[in-house]
Amino acid sequence: MSYSNYVLPATKRAGKWSLTMAWWALFSAMFWIYIAVASAGAVGVVNTVIGMVLTVATYGVINLVLSRYAARTGLTVSLFSRTLFGLVGSALASLIFAATAIYYAVFEGSIIAVAFHEFFGGSMVVWYAVVVLYAVPLAMGGVQNWLDKLNGFLLPFYIAGLVAVVVAATLIRGVPTDWIGQAAAASTLPGWLTSYLIYMGVYIMMMYTFDYARLGRAEDKKFLGSVTFGWVFYAFTFGLNGLIGIYIMSAWGLEASETGVVQAFISSLGFGGVLVILISQTRINTANYFLASENLSAFASRVFRLNLPRYIWVIVCGALAFLLMLTDVLSYLLKALAWQGVFVTAWVAIALVYIALNWKKPHLVPDIRPAKLKAVSPGAIAWVLASAIGIALTEQTAVPVISQLTPLITMVLAAALYYGAYKLSPPQFIDASQTLDAKEEELDPAITD
Image 1 (tube, rainbow, N blue to C red):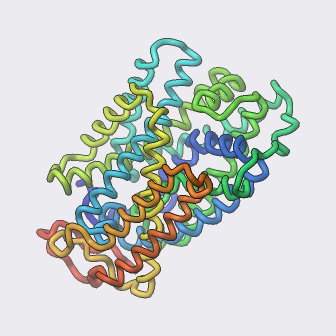
Image 2: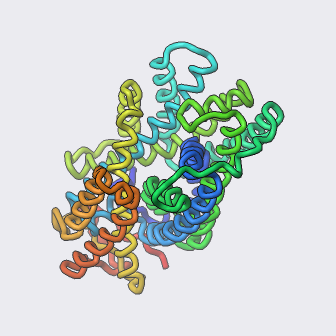
Image 3: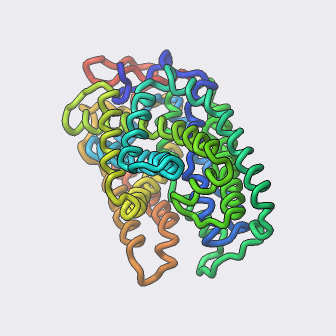
């Protein structure tokens, strides 16, 4: 059975290395190269490196907390959001998560299509269809059944590809003399802070972490919190990818763009560059489609009472991704991600407040049974209000510096509002040892320690 809408029991958990191989699929996203190059172009390489270091530390701490909680409870983002926001609020969280994962699948899939088009020519529509048709079957297998093995097998090839592209770019173009000392553009905020705020735009990784970490065993929490989902992962994902991206793009004198990254790899390695891109995007899109389907399933189950197998939702996600590729997706993708990013940032702040308020209660888990929950809780009002203010601040142009600081403002505002909502209407808990009636929809709590 699929556990998209259920607490995951301890007997269904993945081993730490199996889960690590599946999760580290996200290490190979070309988006990390793109975002680092974009940051370097905006504030300079030195400021970007400082921003990266601070980002790795921040992501490491936050995901340490989230991964341990998810592994202890066996909850998904959707199930956890029930206790934060009520049933309607949890459905909104699932929809935002699914939409964001589909958007990233569109971006990463487009990278492969562009690479195929650049090297082989032909119709972009055909290549869009190809990248979706081959990715969808790969994402149908669960983490324990297939994704860990596929991504574990491909990981060494991606790392070898990164080494090869650096060596080839250097041999062909020489060492770029100004890539470290690249001048920073004028900015109201310090350059390193601007870079840090750019990386805050991908806090969706926290939600990704939560849904994957609930597949882990409670006894592996130290390894999961530091290596699998923590600072080690982000040192490679943001640090290694970012520096390599800045280096090869500088070597070829290319600007940050979807096609620029593709051109740098193909110019350096020829067909080998196409293969590296294919490997990298195959790995990341298994995660994108997996999480999009899990959350679309949770949303449809709650809102439309549709309890379909997960493979059906993988197919639906693939169809949606293909249709989005046929549009001028980049014209609205970044705007959509910015708006959704506000909701995600607020969700992260609220989740951390909730966990902090309950960290001394390890014997208790949230009561997520629908019959015991409100449709809309005060927490949902806090989340929507903080997000609405964050979107308004993002869109206003009167004070540009406020727009830049919106992620930080949103986090503080969401945390404060949710703290008040929590005190006004504390959530319900159940003892971890309590056995739930199967008729009440959820399975037994997964806590084991």
